[in-house]
Image (cartoon, rainbow, N blue to C red; front, side):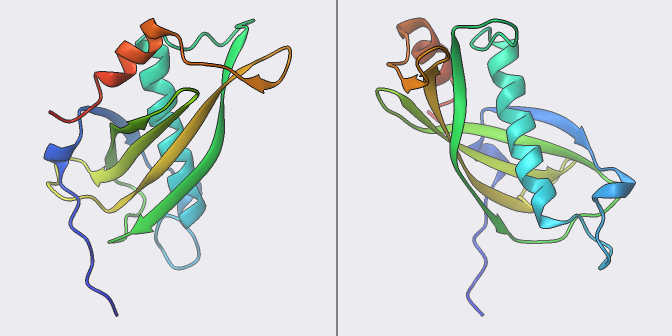
Length: 145
């Protein structure tokens, strides 16, 4: 078995509290792997909404998720309070690569980590479009110094 990578809280710029739910547990008594992708999506979307980069109703621009990955380090289970950390890994002309990790509340190292890639798309044409400068600057605030 390969050595597990240590992903630290200090690597992340923003954190969002999340709660596990009874239905998140699988038959093995821990959070099912697919739920982590929901945690990632929720954290990134929360950042975009609170920073005014995403409007949910009638916005001519939308973010499409084009790739996600998740690496599991240690189990979490219900009932646990958790926090999702979000950072910027890369920003291109039309895409954003976030690093996202899930931490047990207050833990120094992550229980799971991964990538989450968005492409900005024109809602009407369904084609990728350049990220506007104001959104680019806001998202760059997630870059680790």
